[in-house]
Image (cartoon, rainbow, N blue to C red; front, side, top):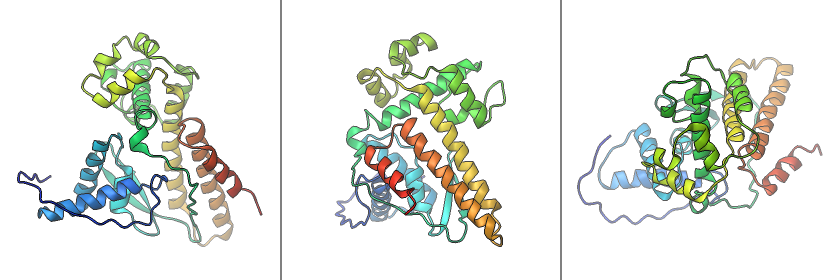
Length: 289
């Protein structure tokens, strides 16, 4: 992208938003996107939408969260009435899908705040490290020669000595990890590496390693693989829908709803990113009145 070598002017911004803060609706990412666009305009830099999404993603990491870019991309490229399918490997890509007619999403506020930036090390960023550790371990388990270079769980689907689809990767995750947590010393023994030395170039991961000693690898891997599988199933259902078939319309709502139920259960049980209030909201919403 373009580089600015001059002095940044003083920019005073007035922000108005109807998104509740720290409610899980990507308000922070939306703010970073808006601020990035305003800052670029103030110094006469023109950014494409893709550049804006990439700049906003990198910028938000300065507040401490190790985000992947999904929220910022959705803020930039989202279109009313369309589903946005986002990919990041090998580079940012996206596409649009249409939902079946009469399909609605109800967004509820549980009134619980999750301030990611202030608790990132203990929760948000720690899950990033757990997924990285799980990817390294599975890479070594399946016999990858370059397993130390595996950066994400998603890479395991496209590299390796065996063809691994998402179902197979879920099975491997259930097979190679114990259900309980691992300590740092256990991981070092299994990987035969000094983790502090291995991650010495990443200060955020080093801080987590210094402050934590419980890492849930099986749960994080199972969630990641199963969630990717559910995304693909959701897209396939939307693409195959026949709007002229009334019975099919009822069935597709049931199938899409089941996928979202499974997603919440996985977030709650395997990724630990839910809370009692949200769980209760989901439970109440499913009760037939």
